[in-house]
Image 1: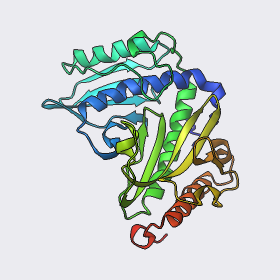
Image 2: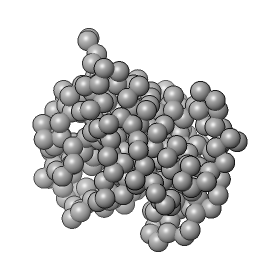
Image 3: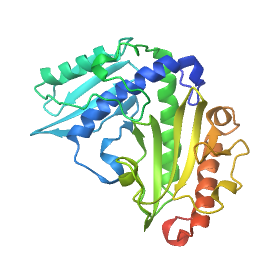
Length: 295
Protein backbone atom coordinates (compact mmCIF):
# COMPACT_ATOMS: atom_id res chain seq x y z
CA UNK A 1 0.00 0.00 0.00
CA UNK A 2 1.37 3.40 -1.00
CA UNK A 3 1.18 5.87 1.87
CA UNK A 4 0.94 9.61 1.26
CA UNK A 5 2.00 11.21 4.57
CA UNK A 6 0.38 14.57 3.82
CA UNK A 7 -2.68 13.75 1.69
CA UNK A 8 -5.36 16.13 0.44
CA UNK A 9 -7.95 16.89 3.14
CA UNK A 10 -10.45 19.47 1.93
CA UNK A 11 -13.27 19.69 4.47
CA UNK A 12 -15.87 20.13 1.72
CA UNK A 13 -14.91 16.76 0.26
CA UNK A 14 -15.49 14.77 3.44
CA UNK A 15 -17.71 16.96 5.62
CA UNK A 16 -20.38 14.29 6.16
CA UNK A 17 -17.86 11.63 7.13
CA UNK A 18 -16.03 14.13 9.34
CA UNK A 19 -19.24 14.99 11.22
CA UNK A 20 -20.16 11.33 11.70
CA UNK A 21 -16.66 10.28 12.75
CA UNK A 22 -16.54 13.18 15.22
CA UNK A 23 -19.62 11.76 16.94
CA UNK A 24 -18.31 8.18 16.84
CA UNK A 25 -15.11 9.29 18.59
CA UNK A 26 -17.24 11.09 21.18
CA UNK A 27 -19.04 7.84 22.02
CA UNK A 28 -15.75 6.01 22.53
CA UNK A 29 -14.24 9.03 24.28
CA UNK A 30 -17.10 9.12 26.75
CA UNK A 31 -16.39 5.50 27.64
CA UNK A 32 -12.84 6.60 28.48
CA UNK A 33 -14.22 9.55 30.44
CA UNK A 34 -16.27 7.15 32.59
CA UNK A 35 -13.50 4.61 33.19
CA UNK A 36 -10.18 6.48 33.34
CA UNK A 37 -9.00 8.01 36.64
CA UNK A 38 -9.16 11.82 36.48
CA UNK A 39 -6.03 13.69 35.43
CA UNK A 40 -5.23 17.40 35.34
CA UNK A 41 -6.30 19.49 32.34
CA UNK A 42 -8.75 16.74 31.25
CA UNK A 43 -5.84 14.62 30.01
CA UNK A 44 -7.66 11.46 31.12
CA UNK A 45 -10.35 11.85 28.44
CA UNK A 46 -8.16 12.12 25.34
CA UNK A 47 -7.47 9.54 22.64
CA UNK A 48 -4.04 8.79 21.16
CA UNK A 49 -2.72 8.28 17.65
CA UNK A 50 -1.49 4.76 16.85
CA UNK A 51 0.11 3.17 13.79
CA UNK A 52 -3.40 2.34 12.55
CA UNK A 53 -5.74 4.97 13.95
CA UNK A 54 -6.82 6.14 17.41
CA UNK A 55 -6.91 4.42 20.78
CA UNK A 56 -8.26 5.00 24.27
CA UNK A 57 -5.16 3.29 25.71
CA UNK A 58 -5.86 0.75 28.53
CA UNK A 59 -8.75 1.63 30.85
CA UNK A 60 -9.62 -0.04 34.16
CA UNK A 61 -12.99 -1.78 34.55
CA UNK A 62 -13.09 -3.44 37.94
CA UNK A 63 -10.33 -6.07 37.89
CA UNK A 64 -10.09 -5.99 34.10
CA UNK A 65 -8.38 -3.66 31.63
CA UNK A 66 -9.89 -2.87 28.24
CA UNK A 67 -8.85 -0.76 25.28
CA UNK A 68 -10.89 0.52 22.32
CA UNK A 69 -9.18 1.18 19.00
CA UNK A 70 -10.29 2.82 15.78
CA UNK A 71 -8.40 0.99 13.02
CA UNK A 72 -8.54 3.18 9.90
CA UNK A 73 -6.41 0.74 7.89
CA UNK A 74 -8.76 -2.26 8.08
CA UNK A 75 -11.72 -0.02 9.03
CA UNK A 76 -12.81 -1.76 12.19
CA UNK A 77 -13.44 -0.79 15.81
CA UNK A 78 -11.75 -3.21 18.21
CA UNK A 79 -12.41 -3.74 21.91
CA UNK A 80 -9.52 -5.63 23.50
CA UNK A 81 -9.56 -7.05 27.04
CA UNK A 82 -6.52 -8.03 29.08
CA UNK A 83 -7.77 -11.64 29.31
CA UNK A 84 -7.30 -12.03 25.54
CA UNK A 85 -10.86 -11.47 24.38
CA UNK A 86 -11.46 -9.21 21.37
CA UNK A 87 -14.73 -7.87 19.98
CA UNK A 88 -14.96 -6.10 16.62
CA UNK A 89 -17.33 -3.75 14.83
CA UNK A 90 -16.77 -2.92 11.13
CA UNK A 91 -16.47 0.79 10.37
CA UNK A 92 -19.02 1.36 7.63
CA UNK A 93 -21.83 3.82 6.90
CA UNK A 94 -24.39 3.67 9.72
CA UNK A 95 -26.29 6.22 11.82
CA UNK A 96 -24.74 7.41 15.05
CA UNK A 97 -27.69 5.84 16.88
CA UNK A 98 -26.78 2.40 15.49
CA UNK A 99 -23.08 2.86 16.22
CA UNK A 100 -23.86 3.85 19.81
CA UNK A 101 -26.13 0.83 20.29
CA UNK A 102 -23.58 -1.56 18.78
CA UNK A 103 -20.63 -0.25 20.82
CA UNK A 104 -22.63 -0.57 24.04
CA UNK A 105 -23.66 -4.09 22.98
CA UNK A 106 -20.00 -5.06 22.43
CA UNK A 107 -19.13 -3.91 25.94
CA UNK A 108 -22.17 -5.65 27.43
CA UNK A 109 -21.29 -8.86 25.59
CA UNK A 110 -17.82 -8.80 27.14
CA UNK A 111 -19.34 -8.37 30.60
CA UNK A 112 -17.92 -4.83 30.78
CA UNK A 113 -20.96 -2.53 30.62
CA UNK A 114 -20.44 1.22 30.68
CA UNK A 115 -23.11 3.92 31.05
CA UNK A 116 -22.26 7.22 29.36
CA UNK A 117 -23.83 10.65 29.03
CA UNK A 118 -25.26 10.47 25.50
CA UNK A 119 -25.28 14.22 24.86
CA UNK A 120 -22.51 15.25 22.43
CA UNK A 121 -19.96 17.75 23.72
CA UNK A 122 -18.89 21.10 22.25
CA UNK A 123 -21.33 20.98 19.33
CA UNK A 124 -24.21 23.31 18.43
CA UNK A 125 -27.71 21.80 18.60
CA UNK A 126 -26.50 18.39 19.87
CA UNK A 127 -28.64 15.32 19.21
CA UNK A 128 -28.37 12.55 21.83
CA UNK A 129 -26.45 9.63 20.34
CA UNK A 130 -29.33 7.19 20.61
CA UNK A 131 -31.58 9.58 18.66
CA UNK A 132 -29.13 10.61 15.94
CA UNK A 133 -30.14 9.10 12.60
CA UNK A 134 -28.93 12.18 10.71
CA UNK A 135 -25.18 11.53 10.74
CA UNK A 136 -24.49 8.23 8.98
CA UNK A 137 -21.63 8.71 6.49
CA UNK A 138 -18.32 6.84 6.39
CA UNK A 139 -16.01 7.24 3.41
CA UNK A 140 -13.14 4.79 3.92
CA UNK A 141 -10.67 6.76 1.78
CA UNK A 142 -11.44 10.04 3.56
CA UNK A 143 -11.13 8.44 7.00
CA UNK A 144 -7.80 6.94 6.03
CA UNK A 145 -6.52 10.27 4.68
CA UNK A 146 -7.54 11.92 7.94
CA UNK A 147 -5.64 9.26 9.88
CA UNK A 148 -2.47 9.81 7.85
CA UNK A 149 -2.67 13.55 8.51
CA UNK A 150 -3.02 12.82 12.24
CA UNK A 151 -0.09 10.39 12.15
CA UNK A 152 2.21 12.79 10.30
CA UNK A 153 1.17 15.72 12.50
CA UNK A 154 1.63 13.70 15.69
CA UNK A 155 5.19 12.80 14.67
CA UNK A 156 6.09 16.47 14.24
CA UNK A 157 4.38 17.34 17.53
CA UNK A 158 6.39 14.65 19.31
CA UNK A 159 9.59 16.14 17.91
CA UNK A 160 8.51 19.62 19.02
CA UNK A 161 7.55 18.33 22.48
CA UNK A 162 11.02 16.84 22.92
CA UNK A 163 12.63 20.28 23.02
CA UNK A 164 10.93 21.25 26.27
CA UNK A 165 12.16 20.48 29.80
CA UNK A 166 9.14 21.88 31.60
CA UNK A 167 5.75 20.28 32.07
CA UNK A 168 4.25 19.24 28.72
CA UNK A 169 1.15 17.33 27.74
CA UNK A 170 1.13 14.13 25.73
CA UNK A 171 0.33 14.48 22.05
CA UNK A 172 -3.35 13.68 22.31
CA UNK A 173 -6.62 13.86 20.44
CA UNK A 174 -9.56 15.63 22.06
CA UNK A 175 -12.82 14.15 20.81
CA UNK A 176 -14.93 17.08 22.04
CA UNK A 177 -13.26 19.63 19.78
CA UNK A 178 -12.01 16.93 17.35
CA UNK A 179 -8.41 18.13 17.30
CA UNK A 180 -4.90 16.88 17.93
CA UNK A 181 -2.83 18.95 20.35
CA UNK A 182 0.29 19.24 22.49
CA UNK A 183 0.83 21.85 25.20
CA UNK A 184 3.73 23.40 27.08
CA UNK A 185 3.37 24.99 30.54
CA UNK A 186 5.37 27.76 32.20
CA UNK A 187 4.67 26.38 35.68
CA UNK A 188 2.85 29.55 36.76
CA UNK A 189 -0.87 29.61 37.67
CA UNK A 190 -3.19 31.43 35.29
CA UNK A 191 -6.10 33.70 36.22
CA UNK A 192 -9.28 31.68 36.86
CA UNK A 193 -11.46 31.03 33.81
CA UNK A 194 -15.19 30.28 33.90
CA UNK A 195 -16.56 27.05 32.49
CA UNK A 196 -16.68 23.39 33.44
CA UNK A 197 -14.18 22.44 30.73
CA UNK A 198 -12.11 25.59 30.23
CA UNK A 199 -11.57 26.22 33.94
CA UNK A 200 -9.52 23.06 34.73
CA UNK A 201 -7.98 23.02 31.25
CA UNK A 202 -6.46 26.48 31.61
CA UNK A 203 -5.59 26.57 35.30
CA UNK A 204 -1.94 27.31 34.44
CA UNK A 205 -0.18 29.35 31.77
CA UNK A 206 -0.07 27.29 28.62
CA UNK A 207 1.22 27.41 25.07
CA UNK A 208 -0.64 25.00 22.79
CA UNK A 209 -0.29 23.94 19.18
CA UNK A 210 -2.45 21.52 17.26
CA UNK A 211 -4.31 20.37 14.19
CA UNK A 212 -8.02 20.71 13.45
CA UNK A 213 -9.60 19.07 10.36
CA UNK A 214 -11.83 22.04 9.64
CA UNK A 215 -15.48 23.00 9.44
CA UNK A 216 -17.94 24.91 7.26
CA UNK A 217 -16.24 28.26 7.91
CA UNK A 218 -12.59 27.18 8.11
CA UNK A 219 -10.71 24.47 6.22
CA UNK A 220 -8.20 22.12 7.88
CA UNK A 221 -5.58 24.12 9.77
CA UNK A 222 -2.82 23.97 12.31
CA UNK A 223 -3.20 26.39 15.21
CA UNK A 224 -1.18 27.97 18.01
CA UNK A 225 -2.28 30.00 21.04
CA UNK A 226 -1.19 31.14 24.52
CA UNK A 227 -3.47 31.33 27.56
CA UNK A 228 -3.58 33.91 28.94
CA UNK A 229 -2.75 35.81 25.77
CA UNK A 230 0.27 38.05 26.46
CA UNK A 231 0.40 41.64 25.19
CA UNK A 232 1.75 41.90 21.66
CA UNK A 233 1.36 38.18 20.89
CA UNK A 234 -1.14 38.60 18.07
CA UNK A 235 1.10 41.12 16.30
CA UNK A 236 4.16 38.85 16.37
CA UNK A 237 5.95 37.88 13.17
CA UNK A 238 5.67 34.09 12.86
CA UNK A 239 6.69 31.54 10.26
CA UNK A 240 5.95 30.36 7.63
CA UNK A 241 4.52 33.22 5.58
CA UNK A 242 1.13 31.53 5.20
CA UNK A 243 0.50 31.72 8.97
CA UNK A 244 -1.79 34.50 10.19
CA UNK A 245 -3.64 35.63 13.31
CA UNK A 246 -7.36 34.83 13.48
CA UNK A 247 -9.24 37.54 15.40
CA UNK A 248 -12.32 35.30 15.54
CA UNK A 249 -10.48 32.40 17.21
CA UNK A 250 -7.75 34.39 19.01
CA UNK A 251 -5.02 32.12 17.72
CA UNK A 252 -2.55 31.80 14.86
CA UNK A 253 -3.66 29.58 12.00
CA UNK A 254 -1.60 27.87 9.32
CA UNK A 255 -3.68 26.27 6.54
CA UNK A 256 -3.05 22.55 6.24
CA UNK A 257 -2.85 22.96 2.47
CA UNK A 258 0.13 25.32 2.89
CA UNK A 259 1.95 22.64 4.89
CA UNK A 260 0.96 19.81 2.56
CA UNK A 261 2.28 21.62 -0.51
CA UNK A 262 5.47 22.98 1.12
CA UNK A 263 8.79 21.69 -0.17
CA UNK A 264 9.45 20.32 3.34
CA UNK A 265 6.15 19.92 5.25
CA UNK A 266 7.80 18.80 8.49
CA UNK A 267 10.13 21.81 8.53
CA UNK A 268 7.30 24.21 7.71
CA UNK A 269 5.22 22.82 10.57
CA UNK A 270 8.11 22.85 13.06
CA UNK A 271 8.78 26.47 12.09
CA UNK A 272 5.15 27.33 12.84
CA UNK A 273 5.19 25.59 16.22
CA UNK A 274 8.58 27.03 17.22
CA UNK A 275 7.97 30.60 16.10
CA UNK A 276 4.53 30.93 17.66
CA UNK A 277 5.73 29.38 20.92
CA UNK A 278 8.78 31.67 21.04
CA UNK A 279 6.65 34.75 20.37
CA UNK A 280 4.26 33.90 23.19
CA UNK A 281 6.91 32.78 25.66
CA UNK A 282 8.92 35.96 25.15
CA UNK A 283 5.88 38.21 25.44
CA UNK A 284 4.72 36.41 28.60
CA UNK A 285 8.17 36.44 30.21
CA UNK A 286 8.59 32.68 30.51
CA UNK A 287 11.91 31.46 31.94
CA UNK A 288 12.97 29.95 28.64
CA UNK A 289 16.51 29.17 29.77
CA UNK A 290 15.26 26.66 32.35
CA UNK A 291 12.32 25.35 30.33
CA UNK A 292 13.90 24.54 26.97
CA UNK A 293 16.56 22.25 25.54
CA UNK A 294 19.07 23.63 23.06
CA UNK A 295 18.24 22.52 19.48
